[in-house]
Length: 331
Image (cartoon, rainbow, N blue to C red; front, side):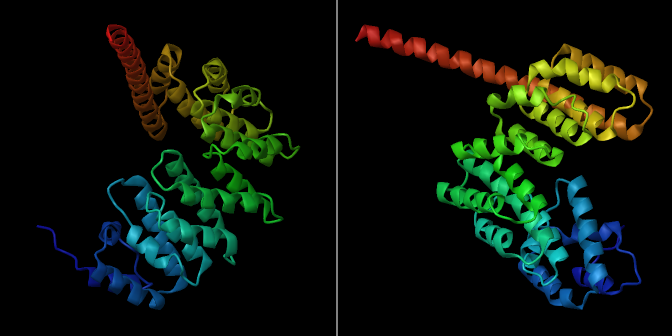
């Protein structure tokens, strides 16, 4: 029978910098009640700076691999921490939050924080809230506030990397002026800006960008190629499928581009994509790659089922329209 660990003993262990942080402790930081969160925040100032970052990095790794845990309480509690690196990690712990009350805090960090790292993370998370706005899951005024903050960053003389992150986040927005910003970035000579524009195109789910994306899938710059391959999948560009298969056949191709091509093929779908992915699984001995390929096949199955559902829904709408027309004739 396993011994129950009290949260106080977990905190005592955290304070001892000579001890490693056990993996078994990480899940105990999840879904903290108000009393436990207060205990955590009370001891936090006494934890050494390097130990703080170690814990947060461990929590983030665990968070990425376990979709059951939630460290939202810790993220909220540390979002105004004096250390910019702590603030940045706290925002990442909030990446799955859909609480619109966070928008004000995030825009304040984006516009006024003294450190770049939390501003970068704030821009990324603000993009997720813009997506929620497009899905009508948050109020329109909050979405517009988020968009206005990001636009002000892009049009400023701020750090170029932050401005690129802001444009990527704005890719989710359907506001007409965003397309102009994306086009402007795409036409720059700087490959990093072109890649940013491509990522924003993918997030837009707007078919207007299909030709731009396909034109860059085989670009000689790996940064641009990677972004274009990702965008091709996000936009479900069927014409990109054969090109992605060609990329996978290139033994000298960049690993990041290869993994992006695999996932994009799973989004685009088709018999050729399925056959190729199955063959890759049979040929590779890399366990991590096999797992990734299996995830891609699951995603391909999901996308195909989703497309079937959409087609059925469209057929259903047509039937309803016919019934409505018949009813009108009877009147």
